[in-house]
Amino acid sequence: AYFFTFPFSLQRELVYANYRHYFINDMKDESYRVTEVKAGVSLSTVFLNKFSFPIGLEYIYNDTFFAKATNQLFFTLGTAF
Image (cartoon, rainbow, N blue to C red; front, side, top):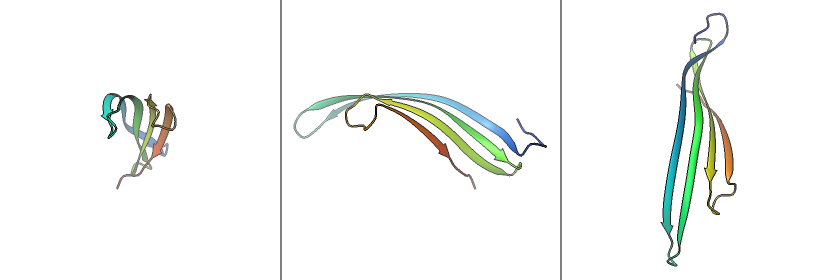
């Protein structure tokens, strides 16, 4: 959706999901099961029909005790050149 009068335009969008399941063995012969689920949205926006700014929003669920928080939400803002 390109706008010629508004300074911001949406170039492309991406919706994604990811599932990972790990078995980790340490040096003491203990094993751990780790499940990680990711879901997110990535938007590529254009400012003044020239400058590209990728914006991302990602939710991560991790059920291991290694992580500081079980549920995490990340917001990313970048630049492309």
